[in-house]
Length: 251
Image: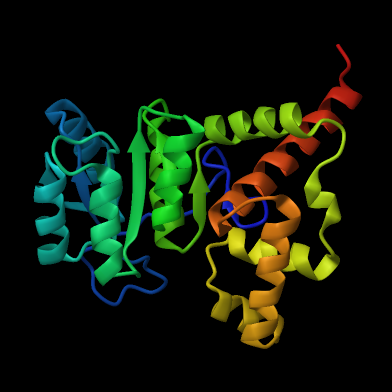
């Protein structure tokens, strides 16, 4: 995990237990999942995958955004796994409706689309992560565990696309370099999904001070939202990592 953003290929340890045993020492919470996807094969295959894990329980399946909205309201799952492209109400519209009333809900987008516009629109709504349907079963399982634990998740392919985007547009210098140490600390915490109030508590700063730092960050990076700032930071740092790798391995 880098700066609060999980690499879904990394290992997330879980102790295998019988989730039906109440009060088991160090027993992880059983993660209740709702799957919203208009393809029955995807719903059934994902259900089979997740129910093989001792700490997962798929509690509901929906084929439309409207059905998903009703099901999430009724069942209050820990994590909702939602496709972007749904008939009628889209996955992003559904997520917006859910999060307006239940901001604590963890919604993980599982999409076939990796375009910057799709990712930005979803994250602006406040979803907990964005994964692609090309992910492996292990990557998806790890991602669901991560968002349940409060970690923002971005698919490795999307991260790589962001890195290429920022390397191409910014050249040798990234506006990230214009940030002060404190602004960088604030941005790191924003990337972990923290609100301004949570950032203030973490850094022991006043809320107005944090709001000022956020405004400065947006201005220096030339973006209009926290989401765009976080995405730019991810892309810039991924590009830096790739550049270092190219230096070590020029061939």
